[in-house]
Length: 79
Ligand SMILES: [Zn+2]
Image (cartoon, rainbow, N blue to C red; front, top):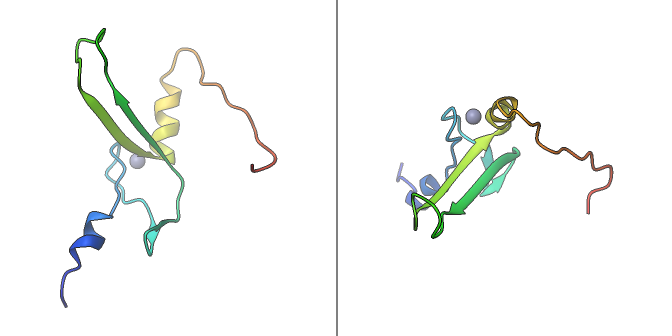
């Protein structure tokens, strides 16, 4: 079978645990956290862009390490 390069590039993994984020026909079937941040002038790492993805488990584990809990609002309606 011929390897589909485009599809393999669209494969997404969690940076925390390396678990593959479930996808079907390029549509994400599992919720995950994604962040991209560019550090600016006042940073020690000026000009560095950092981006990562976390599965829900890793994201929850990260929140547990916070001294001040993250703000959580339960949304009953999707908008
Ligand atoms: Zn993970």
